Image 1 (cartoon, rainbow, N blue to C red):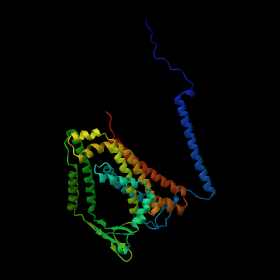
Image 2: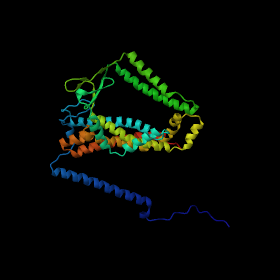
Image 3: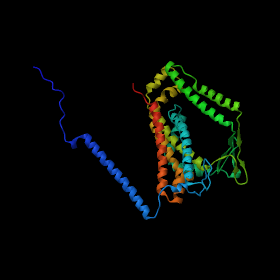
Image 4: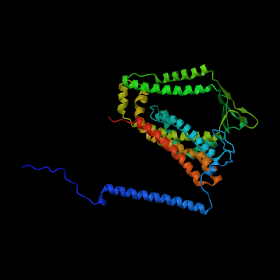
Length: 396
């Protein structure tokens, strides 16, 4: 007996309101309409309340004279500067602390994280005590400790402590020599950029050579030699020179040099040490997530302990470390706003604090401040996600 094939059976017809595609589009449209309506209502209500209080809105205040002092700035600042310049000062001061904090917290966190897995009892115990102590004390209290108990407890100006390289430390901060390069030094900066590009290129070449032939290349020593030859050669051939303006103690304070205020130092110390404790745990967890079989395989190849860690364990652990490490970088950047508590002129202190109080433009100042932190966080996430994609395991 034969059966006549009539093609695939037609799916049963359903009402349009039971179609999952149409229902999905309908509910998304409803949510979008409700969200837009809520935003319109918030904006309209806020505008009506401000009009009832005879308050003006807009960003025209940015071009008005600020009329207040800022204790620390990366570029010249006077009372005659505008509010938009105060905005820039706040951003640059925040970026300065965030950049320094991320660099030092990463270095310290990786060191402590590896020390947590050391076979040496003393090193492992000290690392554990550091992590369990630091991460369980609120960051604000740690900032107060560094600022009031350490830096503000330093000697007075007349009794400053002499540090190496003609530097001084007292209760007003650290005073270091100011480098003053001549006009020829511009070529040395170009040489530094060329040296960095050459080292990065050499590093990629060495990796590809290792993957293709299995032969290792002395990257570190070659990079140092390459940088010294390029930079020192340019410095000597161009006849460039750098003079140093030394800090000199006068009647009431030091004159000359560069002053690093105690507010900046306390904020950098606090953020670095606090964030490093979390990074250390992230690194420890990432290393322990790597299978022990990888270590045994590296041992069977005759790799030394340092090479096993650098070439086998850490590269695989980075796939686990990067996502939580990104969160720590974001936290450090946002936690820099706590600098307002010790008087450091970061963005919240300068713009969402002093500028807001003087102009009364609360919505504009807060909105711009939030926008800056949002952009910084998205940029950090974007860079770390790009790096995470590069080190991620590629399925074949």
